[in-house]
Amino acid sequence: MSVKHKKVILGVTGSIAAYKSAEILRYLQEESVDVSVVMTKEAEYFITPLTLSSLAGKKIHHWGFNEEDDAWQMKHIKLAEEADALLVAPATANIIGKFATGLADDLLTCIFLSIKSKIYIAPAMNENMYKNKIVEENCQRLRQFGVQFIEPIKGKLACGLTGEGHIADPKKIADTVIKELFRR
Image (cartoon, rainbow, N blue to C red; front, side, top):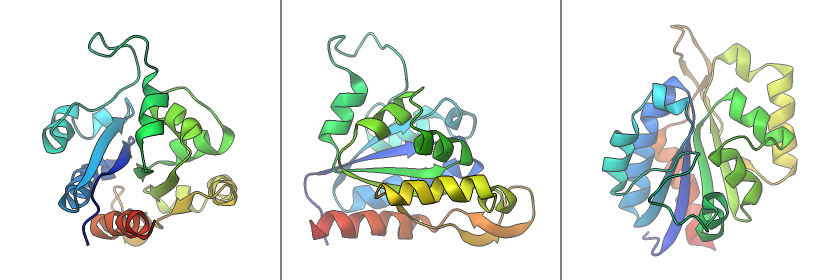
C-alpha cells in the first residue's frame, strides 16, 4: 500500500528508545510518507540531529529561532497545518504529562496544541513509570481527546529489567499510522 503525498511529523523525545525513531522514519519513508522530524532537546542526548537529518533527507526541527527560517512564519503553526498526522515515538512520561496538561514550552508541545490532524503516541519508559497512576491518568485524559496510543510491550528495559514499557515494534508503529493515513 503506497501513501502518496502524506506528511507526518515524527516527534522524538528523550528516551533511550530514541534510536528506534530512525527505524520508524525509514518504514514511513518506504511508503512514500514525507516525514518532518521534531526533536526535543532531551532527545539529542540519545540520538543526534545529524543521524535523523541524514535519514530524513532534510533538516530536523528544534525549538528556537533559526536564521534560515522565514522570521514571519511561526514554525509550529506551519508544521501543524501541513501535517496529516503527528506521531510521537518514543513518548516519555514527561512529554505525555506536558501534552495532558496543555504545557507548551518547546516546539513539539506547541505543535501538539496546534495540530488538527490525528495524533499517535508510542510510549517508552520504565514499567514503574508507565504504571504510575499519574501517567495512567495523563494517558487516559489524552485518549479522551482522541489521541491514539500505540501501546508499549513487555520487553527488556533500559534499567536491565524486563517489564511493560518497552516501545512497540517500530514496524507496528509505522504500520498503524500508515493504515490510518491510507484509510482516509
